[in-house]
Amino acid sequence: MKALEAAEAAKRLEEKKQNEREKRKAAAKLEREKLKQEKDLKQKQEEEQKKKRDADVATRKRQRDEEGRKEKERKRKCVEEARKQQKQPMERRHANSEKDSHPKAFVSKSYMLDLYPSVIQDIYLL
Image (cartoon, rainbow, N blue to C red):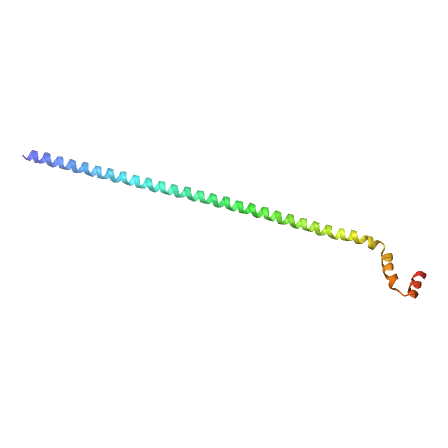
C-alpha cells in the first residue's frame, strides 16, 4: 500500500513538474512572440521614419532647386532689364546725336525766326 501511494505521489510530482515545464515553455513562447511583434513594429516604425526623412529631404531639395531656378530667373531678368536700360539711352543718344552734331544750326534756325533783325545782323557779322 505504501509503495502504491509512493508511486502515485511520484506520478503526481512528475505530472506537476511536466505541467510546470509546459507552462514555462508556453510563457517563453508567448514572450518570444511578443518580442518578435515588438521588433517588427519597431522595424516598421523605423522604415516609416526613414521614408518620411527621405521624403523631407527630397522636398527640401526640390525647394532649393526651385529657389535656385527662381533666383537665376530673377538675375536673368535683372541683367536683361539692365541691358535694355543700357540700350535705351544709347538709342536716345543716337537719335539725339543728329541734333547734337549740329547744335548751332539747330538752335540758330529756331532762334532766327524769333530774333529782331538787328540781332540777326550781329549774328551774321560774327
